[in-house]
Length: 322
Image (cartoon, rainbow, N blue to C red; front, side):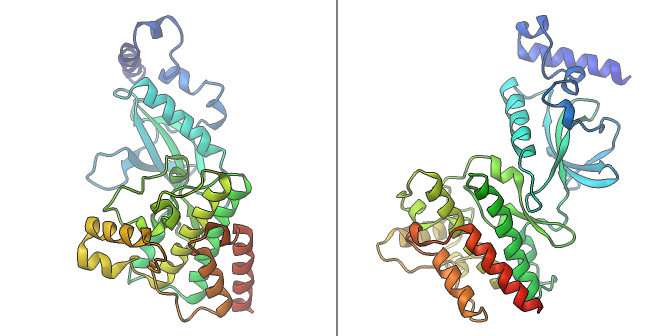
């Protein structure tokens, strides 16, 4: 039955691709995908595994299933309805994500087919607690001081990996850092490879993580400048971990999400603006306050590099555990 179903699916996909695809092996044929030179080393035997939507009752392209006995997250693409361009982009993103391997980057496990070979999926490690934002906003989750600093260090280590590799993140924020069941924080690999969001996308409450120069559209277009933008966003995440609330909370409460973002953008664009997403925590030691203040500098050149931030966090945690 499955082989017959595959034949029907292949016929549909070839028809969707055009007449030229029939005369040569179709690269997205379910029978071909697992044997492709660029995919075979990463292929997972998930065709017979049961999968379920990530959120019960929702028909989405995010699912979960067991991979080698452990729960995994699946990012899916319907092969029967997607264009060849979408399929090629999906595979290209998979290969780019697969190349990012670090203890503080969400791990990509491989690629496979599910649902009678109609759906191509990328399997990733399952991050049970969701984003850092979900964790810090949840009043039922107790976070001790050392745990909060460890969350900062985990996030910084993920960013350090990218910067060592000569790559900026580009859209770092607290929803793009995920937390596993053990409380380890990792950068969401999907957010790293997708295009950065626009600073004009108002109403999504991520403007706090945009460095002032990006809001003013005055950012220099080079790697060092992009890394400095990441450092600003990282410092805002640090503050949010301790504040355990939304950035610019009072502004959003007064004006709502869209108008609130517009008010923030106008204020940040003003020369000499001192508007900040959070007040600096008074409980922080002086050296950490000064470090984060440098990260939040409106002068990108004045911000520290990620290696210095990791070193300072490691030293601070060592003192806490001494």
